[in-house]
Length: 377
Image 1 (cartoon, one colour):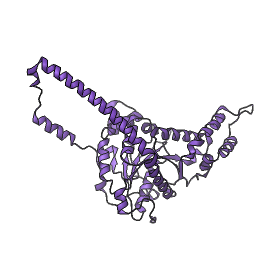
Image 2 (cartoon, one colour):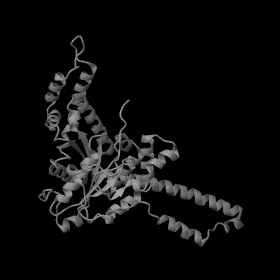
Image 3 (cartoon, helix red, strand yellow):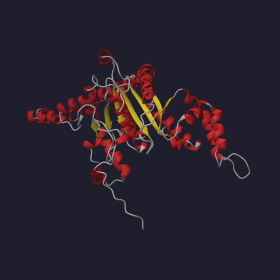
Image 4 (tube, one colour):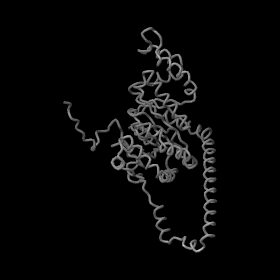
């Protein structure tokens, strides 16, 4: 692979020490190419001069194989198949429950990430293929808030460009992107993937020029009923395009090809711009919200402690001898300390040599993918 010139990720040692790594949360519909996008981003960052390997987290417990080597893999902590059997769940319920169980250990993940903060520029999160499992679950919100509270964070919404050429599909994707933006309240980048198959110019035109989208909508089949009047869906999409006009103005959009590597320099430039946006607009709001949460939590703790002390005082007045029995053995304290130090999250960074990644253009079928599909009939 040809060596790329130093992009926005390359910086001096002093700058690296001063700046925290930026976290990229990769989200997208099933089949949009999230894992391939993460693989190519990993490959691109390795090819920079000097190389800037990212710290990668795989959060999909059901995936059999990923085209990159994650530093932290949810599959090392939670067995998706066993979760399905133990809790009698279907595929989506198993993924959701596995993510919930992993989230209970996410403080350990943050600790490992912080240990690498001085040596990496990017922390990349690859989320489950079922987009709703991460974006609309409590565990997804906890992970997003935890990362955003610790590191500058940007959401990369990956879109399957060839499948958005129809105005209705394009509008559906934009509405979903809008909902995720306002839910996460983080800097947001639209990543039009697979531009080697379908350039994303049409999408940029539809986002910047309302009349272009109107013309594409009018030219698309099925926009009028038998009497020549616009259908309900046509009218709805016309109205929604006007509503989303303000949403488009504050949005970054880049086109990339995870196969050829085109557009990743522009993507990293958009990420660099999102860092400034995060520090200027989002960080003060996050800090204010965190201060409010901590105050509410502290008030609740103070209230609970006041009640406990009051109850203890009443109990000691009624039963002075019983208070002497409220002790525990020193061995119990040691056992508790051992339990607190137990580490279940595995960091595989030391198991691999530098520059070990997969070029998807040269990838072959994985050894574990020995699948023989039965012939129909």
